[in-house]
Structures are given as C-alpha cells and as structure tokens.
Image (cartoon, rainbow, N blue to C red; front, side):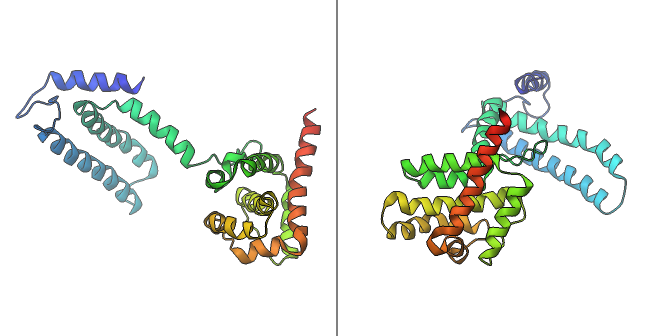
Length: 252
C-alpha cells in the first residue's frame, strides 16, 4: 500500500469524526491549533514508544514482547505525522522521496556483503573530494575509485597494509576506509603533477585535510606515504591498477 493511500484513509477517517474540534481542519497561518495539538500528540506517542523500549531495557519483559507492543506505538506515531502533513497540505510521499535522494548523496553506499566489493561512491569523503577537485583531477578520482572498487580482495588489502607499515603508518581496519586512504594518497600525488607546481599540494592539502582526518590520517601520515619520490604512493596506486586489470581479465 502506497503512503498516499494511507494518507487518504486517515483523511477519510478524520473527516467523519469531530469532538471539541474538527479532526481534519486545515492548518493555516490564521488557524494552527490543530498543528499544536498534533505536534504535542506526536511527541506523546514517540514518548510512549520510548517508554516501551525503556521497560524492555530494564528487564520488564522479553524482546519478543517488545516486538508485539511496538507496531501499535509506531502506528500512532505515523498517524500524527500523516495528520500534520495532510492538514498542512504537504505532499508527504513526495517529501519522503526527495529526502531519500538527498540522503543517497549524503550517505554513500556501504560494502556489498555478498561480494565484499566496494563502490567508488562508498568511499568515505568521496563526494567531498569530487566537489573541490579540478576537472582533470575529478576524472582521475573516478578512475582510481573504480580501480579501488575492483581491488577489495584479501591480497590487495594485505599489500596496502604492508606498504603502509614500511612507512610506519597503520591503515584503518575497515576495507572501505583502507581504500579511502589509498584513494586520498593517489589523489594527493596526482594533484601535484596535474597542477605542475610544488605549492599545488599544499593548497590541495588544505582542502583534503578534513577528508583525510575523517579516516584518522593527518599530514604526517600522508607525507610518509608519499615520501621518497612518491615511491610508496606509486605502489599504492599500482596495487589498485593491478587489481583492476585482474578483475577485467577475470570478467572476460
């Protein structure tokens, strides 16, 4: 059943009932008593749901009993959300779908459990890097991200850990974050070469630092991984490139 169908059912139910006030009264700037009532009622229903969870948490009843009680409480919460929406002439279904699309951009996809692979959108900080990258660098980010997505195998992960250990750097345990660091290293190195001047990396680092910091990496770690003529960084990128070639060969 679609959300708009549920809204229509609730609206029909409300239109046939009236106590001290009109249950289906439109909410406007001039008449918003229904909004106040519904908002307070919504808060109360959320409180009742939380109270059931509190009782379970302190041991009053079993988890199965909690699951038996929750549907009714959740339905009460939904009813008042629906009432606030339709009485305010808000398209709740449209709002939900728009918010879902917004959250898809805000919260990238996670590792796919079945394959263990990662997608480039799943890299923590990927969207942030793309936003401040130049056109040429943005293309490179796409390339290396696709390679990293193909390289989420045990051997590649172990090689990345080994390369980092040579620089006394410890990569995150989670594969998404591990490849996020590898991506940051590759992007950091390529930023300098694309711009063609040494100071480009310093300017780029100021933008990249918050993304790296989210992975627990600072300038020292990045400097260690890109030291000595970027040898280590080159190997990090090579691991990703090799994995992509192998993945493509296996696909054939």
